[in-house]
Length: 224
Image (cartoon, rainbow, N blue to C red; front, side, top):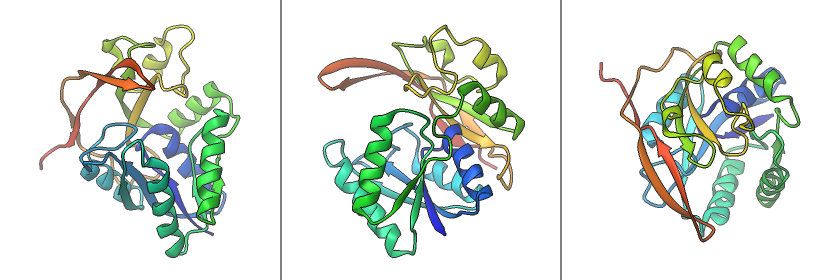
């Protein structure tokens, strides 16, 4: 079965990719939704060239689409229909247990005639993190939500020390949006990515009419 994966570049998607391939899915495409300028990804604020390099290292063909938050659903469905035209029949997602996310994913996939596959659904967080490290995960924390984590967490390596240092109540996988990661190496990579990171910066947004604060760590491929 030919498949695509909804791709943010993070650890949960990476583990979902490994599991989906182990289950027999031929995952060929990495679909990333960009902001309406096309300058960065919607979820993790990453540049498309970095995501393309990462996808290639994992044997995936990068696919992108631009959308504002107002046009996100329609833009995503259009991108999924394009993938269906390439022979894709299933889309892999890395969500763990937020029911509204799964309902949305199943809805947009159904609109494109595709099946949503969630290999991590209802899995224990600590067990998932342990599996990631056992599979050689190398990752950087690229965004943090100020409501859950202070600025010092942004830009850190996602490793056992990071997980042990998380405040009480913060999910080890960041499933509630507490933080997001970018994977630079581990199982499935042809080679680890030579990534450089700049100092993190504060980023204020207006979410559902309320101000919210984040920190972001810019990344780029190291020049060779």
